Image 1 (cartoon, rainbow, N blue to C red):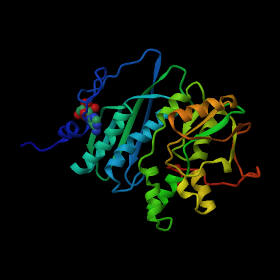
Image 2 (cartoon, rainbow, N blue to C red):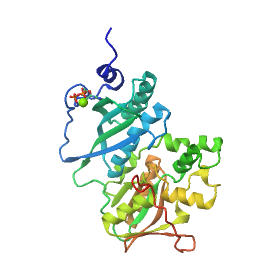
Image 3 (cartoon, rainbow, N blue to C red):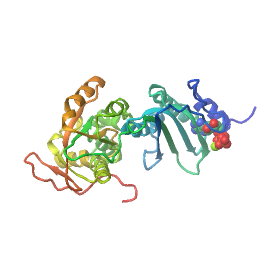
Length: 322
Ligand code: ADP
Ligand code: MG
């Protein structure tokens, strides 16, 4: 019998049925239909063992998350998923790992209708590298971009903050072991929910949007730079994850302002959109909070409950800054 090789691996773990309009895994290229009047939204994110995930991470969660973090970028543009590709470098063929990874990936791929249409598979010299590219579509001139925040816009945020950061610090042993808390928080790390429905519904309503995967201050900073404006954020309006609210105040502030691995949307919109945004949030069942205002200037100022600026230096995650 022939040895189980690259093509058997692709066939067994990654080739899955796709809609008739798509040519998926198996040819030199995949073929996708183009919808008239739309543009493609394309984004790639890599996950590298030891940098983005810990060795021995549960493969089902990893499969889910490697697609989820990419879908979050489509959500932030208000794009609808169409398909994705997966480039995978693994040191060996480990069937248990592959089966788990593929099931996590395909489950989210099916529910989000972001079909796996191709990729590349290779042996790595050390560790696992996962690179996913997502393709979505958005009506021409209707994408939610970073460069269109306007003076006087409200700044909004979906979900809550700090959960992923504290979960990671617990996992790394940087905070005293607390298994109960870790178990309550680990879903932030393992099962972030891409806010696709929110992003889609904000098209034509929000002026700008970003997902805050590198932390609120850093990613809001990208909106400010692209849109040439400043922001005031109200610290007491930031939604803190329930299961960290009893922790040390300065740790909470660090977690909510700078903690990364958050797949929530930060978006800006005119004040006259407030009711409409609350109605959208209610309809799709995603909490949103108004956390500040777009102002003149170029910086983000964090204000405390007395409207005094809070000093804060650590901005967020930058792979080359450490
Ligand atoms: P080529 O040599 O033309 O690049 P490959 O032999 O690398 O093609 O891959 C064969 C087929 O399997 C292609 O359709 C490719 O897109 C797909 N494929 C390879 N690896 C993966 C993967 N990890 N997930 C999904 N599809 C994959
Ligand atoms: Mg190839």
